[in-house]
Length: 226
Image 1 (tube, one colour):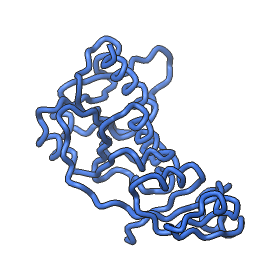
Image 2 (cartoon, rainbow, N blue to C red):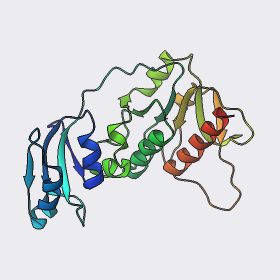
Image 3 (cartoon, rainbow, N blue to C red):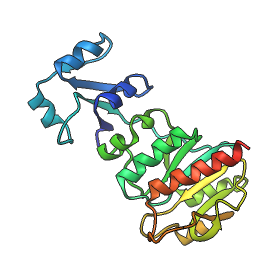
Image 4 (tube, one colour):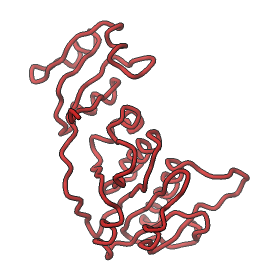
């Protein structure tokens, strides 16, 4: 409603300070304020009790900030980019982890379907560990976006797909991660150009979306480095 979101913790707020995000206000313990005070920003010194009231964490880490949600830009994909697209992703921890993984492996951007979790949810922001401020992230109608970019390969993750250790991944493309419980919806499966899977060597039923994305991006980067 207000177009703003909460950033919590020393590391995340320091990452925010070095980003292009507009900052509304910062509330920190006196020690933090003394270390990072700047005339250009509105920084307030608060007591531990006041910080606890502002924070969503049980044990607040020195500081919280209020930042502006950036305007959504029209999703224009680069043909040679490496993208992660998330279809109806619900879990904030998975969403933040995937943004962080994208940052670690140098992805071009992360795309979320319109009915995915809010990436400015405090749990997503915390899980992203500052990567949200560096990684381009957009919400869009995924079927429409993929249909408009048919020249870009779409790599879909399926239980019955070909093993990532035996298949050859493209030099660029979109890695499509499905919903935690239901996978990739049929409407999007029709646009997938390559079906892959992570083979199981033990008895676990499945991997969560964040872990699976990390394994897939690692193998994709390994193949590209050969």
